[in-house]
Amino acid sequence: MKEKKKLSLAAQIFIALVLAVIAGLLMQKYANFAETYIKPFGTIFLNLLKFIVVRGCGQNSGLL
Image (cartoon, rainbow, N blue to C red):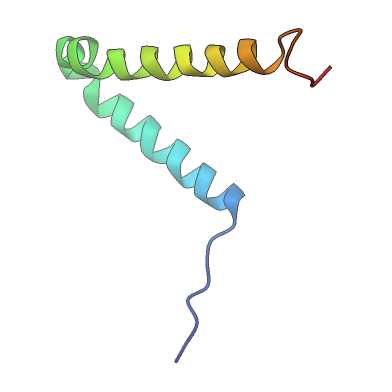
């Protein structure tokens, strides 16, 4: 059997970035849809990142 060659992490990130830019350009005509249905996912994601950073760097975390 042939082994499938996996893309490097950098290549995967670059492809995702290009696809996100294309999706953003296509969604310009549907700004109301993006504002209503897509923006909440971005807000939740950023709040989770903030939660991880604040909890991970707290005084009692043992990391400092």
